[in-house]
Amino acid sequence: MSNQLLKGKKGIIFGALDEKSIAWITAIRCFEEGAEIVLTNAPVAMRMGEINKLASLVNAPVIPCDVSSDEDVENLVTESLKHFGGGFDFVLHSIGMSLNVRKGKHYTDIDYGFNSKTLDISAMSLHRVLATCMKKDAINDWGSVIALSYIAAQRVFPDYNEMADAKALLESVARSFGYQYGVKKHVRVNTISQSPTKTTAGSGVKGFDGFINYAEKMSPLGNASAADCANYIVAMFSDLTRMVTMQNLFHDGGFSFTGVTQAIIEQMEK
Ligand SMILES: NC(=O)c1ccc[n+]([C@@H]2O[C@H](COP(=O)([O-])OP(=O)(O)OC[C@H]3O[C@@H](n4cnc5c(N)ncnc54)[C@H](O)[C@@H]3O)[C@@H](O)[C@H]2O)c1
Image (cartoon, rainbow, N blue to C red):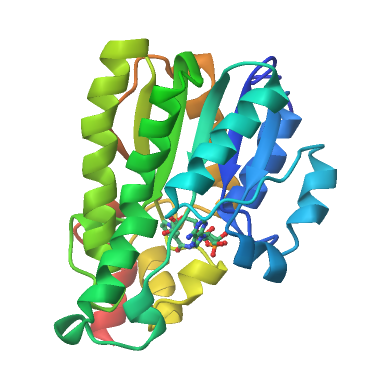
């Protein structure tokens, strides 16, 4: 399906690790819709991942960038400007990493050194990318920036651990920077709060299988897939959503506003 919604648009996509990654599927959809893309990921992820396969599918260069490094982000933006021959129109921040979850630390016993790295990679990196783009005047007027979030920013999902705090911070940065970039250049900044999705980052959450099944039963439309998310991101990068900014947009089949469903009641009555 292609409506050329992104014809003439250019953008950077962070976070495509493998075929399951939301960023991977989004890169393919953006390409199908006519966009020109630069792909990027952390150097370590590139060694593990298959990003070159994606790069040939979407005809994009790959520029390594550890998003916690000022230098790497600056280099990425400079090289992207060179590649595109000028400014670009969209950025997808599809990045998450929790060091305490990786090390098996409980939320009540986190290591604060790991925690500050988690917040830096998963949340403040959005600030770093936006600030670098603003300094270099890299995003065109009416550009669109999306970062991916999760409802643990608003409601408690105990095993989501410190990532809940990271997502709350990420959504706050999207609002605060969205104001600044909106006033300065009509650039809009939003987060999309996605259903649980079977990817490398998703499956890292303890008890993930239980929680994805629970969310499926608690959502009137069922869980939103990565492909659905990619379509929503395309819409948000297109000119059809020009006046949407500073929002956290739930993309979760109705989960966020559902108190209970018949399926859950029946399960409880068993
Ligand atoms: N999978 C889910 O259930 C789910 C639900 C809601 C939101 N999200 C969010 O969606 C986004 C994408 O995750 P995904 O599910 O596609 O998993 P994924 O594991 O495929 O993607 C996460 C990406 O973050 C990258 N990354 C980690 N550290 C980095 C660093 N220092 N610099 C640059 N990149 C770095 C990884 O290399 C990887 O490509 C994340 O923000 C995640 O929190 C996921």
